[in-house]
Image 1 (cartoon, rainbow, N blue to C red):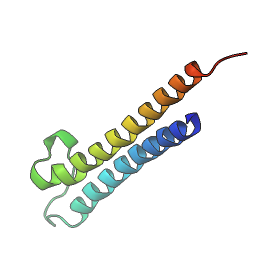
Image 2 (cartoon, rainbow, N blue to C red):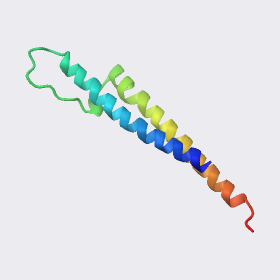
Image 3 (cartoon, rainbow, N blue to C red):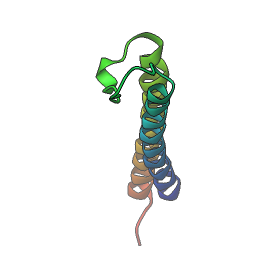
Length: 89
């Protein structure tokens, strides 16, 4: 169980990195295909997003990340409980 827990922790950290990369990538696409008259384009901070941008770029990935972390912590707790319940010689 500890190995599976570690796998879920690694998956969650990989997902977090991919989430950050995807967010910056999508925001840069918005700059690339935005107004041609704009001389400077800033990446919007996540807390300034509204509506479907927030749910697609922040909400759903955050739910997935929390789900992965909850599974990892649960499996870690199950592994610790299993270690305590086994009789030692």
